Image 1 (tube, rainbow, N blue to C red):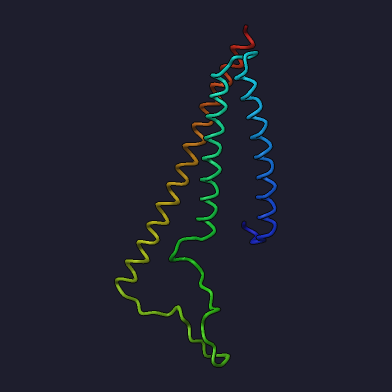
Image 2: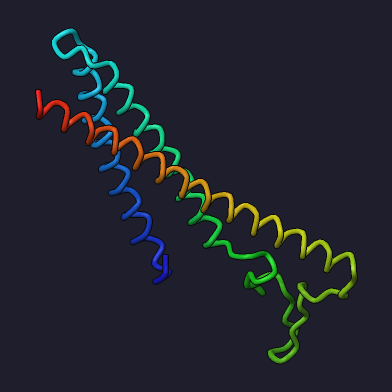
Length: 150
């Protein structure tokens, strides 16, 4: 994203998606094993499912963060002059120039506030998901210790 090379970014996202799908399939298989009568560990299957759900939430919020960051704050976004009129090389009739009014300032401030709120919510959501994942993984560690001591 930093380099601005959209094709490289899209390929990376595609590769990561494939890897996530592979991991998800493996977890589903393990979950299924825990549920069958040979292991009879529905509790562990539920734990894995909870981790998967939190990972899904974290992934969705990470994508939201990336989209928000790429778009930037409304008041700081660069404008394209593709729709502007150029009668002569030095005469630029910009469609973006408008009168500064209180209403326009309020509208811009509200858009920035909405952006800031969405960004903070996404960051907080990722943090909450990471915390929940870590708590579930701590439970897994306890189960591993318990199984090793049996």
